[in-house]
Amino acid sequence: MRTSMDEMPLRPGATTAFYLKGVRQKSLFLMLLSVAIIALGLYAVTQGAYELRIAQVLRVLFGGGGDAADVVVWNIRLPRIIAAVVCGWGLSLAGLSLQSLLRNPLASPSTLGISQGAAFGAAFSVVFLGAEVVSVTISQINDLNAQDLGTALRRTPGVNISRYNPLGSFGGATGGAVFIRGFGSSRPGAEIKTLVDGE
Image 1 (cartoon, one colour):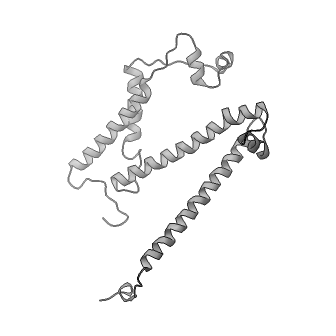
Image 2 (cartoon, one colour):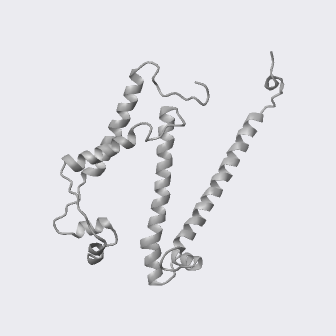
Image 3 (cartoon, helix red, strand yellow):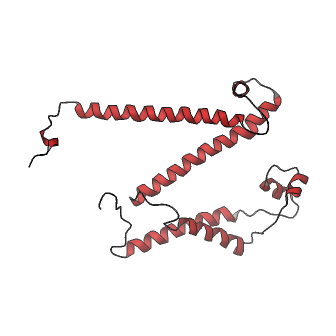
């Protein structure tokens, strides 16, 4: 039995034109998102305790502006905004690679044991690899003339910041993912399957 798709006559180049139309639409959408990110970034630079207008921010970005505005934009606000954008890209790429690797659009780090493995690895490094637990008050941070907790800890005499926590978190996350994936693939019928398209 022939379907309506079989009865449609295909012109030469129709598939290519349809594909190019989709590429143009996606490119336009990505350009609009890029403009939105830039506009929101400029707006975010103006927000904070030190008031800045968008005209001042643009002057600073293009080489003008005052000393205080230069410090606020280049040393405080712009690095934070760039870090937020890069972290967002990284998280989206990590989710894409995780879902593509497992062929499951519902895969997430918490359902696969990656988050729990990272927590276990960090706790293991704190308990067994000699990381110290130190409490620092706000007044100590102010007395040390520190901008954040990490700087305050580095300036506190006798305190060593352990480098094992990120290593333990990464190792625990990787071990948890490998364990859960291996456990699921070793039992017949226990693989994580995509239920959306009926596989």
